[in-house]
Image 1 (tube, rainbow, N blue to C red):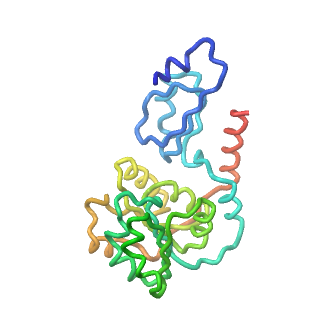
Image 2: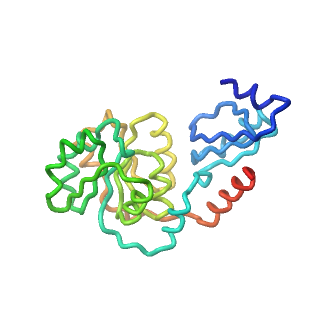
Image 3: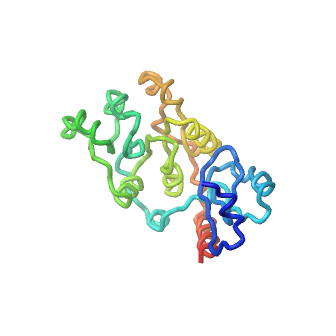
Length: 237
């Protein structure tokens, strides 16, 4: 699809919005660009070079935080467990690959698995401190996350969501783009970035995973997040 042609059409009667988390900028032909990659503020001049009229919402606060998670951030929630979930679908089957180590972590653990992995590990459902579930609806997942001491996942939306709740985590990249996103979050001291999944053995995981986060600081500004949401809402309306 030729977005430039659509954007520049002289009879266009609608607004075009582009949501991305690209870690390397590319020309964007739209009315509003939303890029939640934490370093995307550095791309401002690049985007404007190709589109002088573009409205930009860039950086970590441009993530579209759900109302449910912003409301959870106001509550004092008891931390009951750690959450281990790799995007729900866990495309690289990391829970199964590292389950021998994960099940020994000395915390109550909730695993969110895909159907294939669930079949292999469901026999451990009755084991002490292990809860194994299939993919949960978003609202239930956010509740489980809010009750977590920390999480183990991929560098994906969970980093934004957990950050807004003041919850640290360990992340294992399974894509190059995720690796760059993880590096950006690591600089904020929000997560512990583990090696790319192909380079991570279970013995390395045991050595490098963090079970305590004494230096973690919740630097989330709810008011700033809500202001950003309002900018986007006003543009759409």
